[in-house]
Length: 121
Image 1 (tube, rainbow, N blue to C red):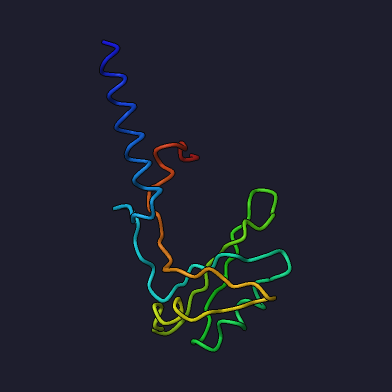
Image 2 (image 1 turned 90 degrees about the vertical axis):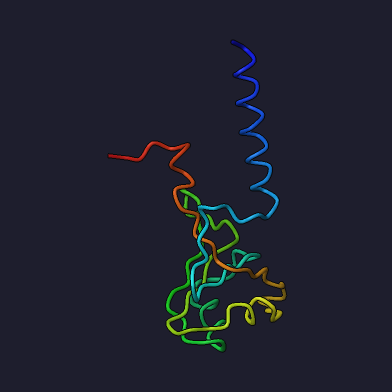
């Protein structure tokens, strides 16, 4: 019946709308000792960002997220070797090249793409 199709679409839309309002999805898992960094511009490289966050602890990895062509998407993640107070880092105002970085807890979205993308064999 056509009615069942409509109700399925509305439930999907409301689920994605809820997800986009900053709610942590059940698939999301907080990554320990890792900080989400937004507001990264093209002039910033991973080494510079790593040294910037070095005052909070020993930086294990800096990963700037890029698209398929290698262009920076303007955000990334900084992970630390030792236990750091992620909340304290998030609350500190970090300015880099005159821009304030947007900081937040790093949430690894698990199996989020599996619904839309077929896994490659």
